[in-house]
Image 1 (tube, rainbow, N blue to C red):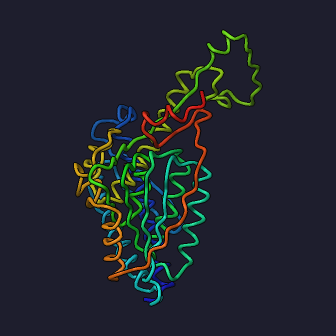
Image 2 (tube, rainbow, N blue to C red; image 1 turned 90 degrees about the vertical axis):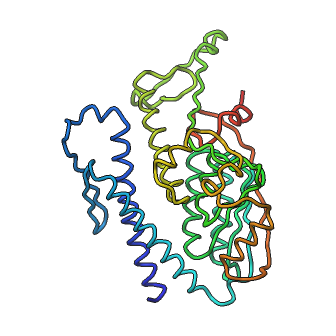
Image 3 (cartoon, one colour; image 1 turned 120 degrees about the horizontal axis):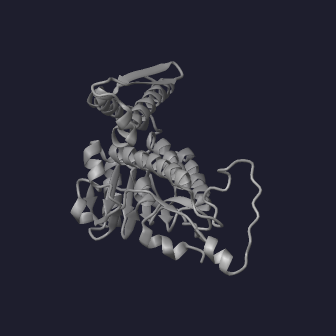
Length: 338
């Protein structure tokens, strides 16, 4: 099977995997939400997801079979990744690129990191990537963008994530794109969850004689604006948005760490752990940076690789509006503008 055929097959498998993941999340949400009250006892609900040349049908009562199929497809993806990595030029497995992600993650950091990922992908002399993460997380969008780019990179080059201090929430989300996660024994990892920050300055405006006139085209156009509180309906809408992001986070951890969904949810309380306490679960092993490089060299099948350190971009992170975040609440306060 040549490289082009492997890519075509991998694309097909990933598309099918995405379809099944969507169905799985829909079923999980149906089970855990108030929608379950609307289901008639013993009634079978069919969910149909259509994608190009692919149709997936299943029922609420068949989640186990669906999960088994997802795991089977994930194993196929891992096999195809190995095939693609073996197709790399002989001169490839000679250099390790250390890609740092330091500090809270916003759009500017995502732009910088994605640019470097694409440079690394095109550089045939780089055979593996050491993803050095020291981050509390950040905005949902930028975190997911970096994660997706790293997943693409992982199909051709092995990735090991390392943290010496903390990889929380969005930082941990990104680490799950790696083949292995190595952490200092006392590094903080986890905080699997989503946070929504809303500024309600209505009383502040009133006390200071500030009147806000709003002209809008729809009743939800200023939802989340700081000059007013949220309505009960809007709170429910935001709750659903946050739950969607949360289900995505669960799926990323479950896939990246090869955990069943029940185990993943057990560690999805928003809590952080010392890496030594979740060794073999949220992280593969504990050790320092040199040990992480050694693990990556083993994945690259080389004894000693040249190491190149990319620069880390400094970001002026701030939370300036109502936002959905992959970040622990204890870090949020430092970045609130007021």
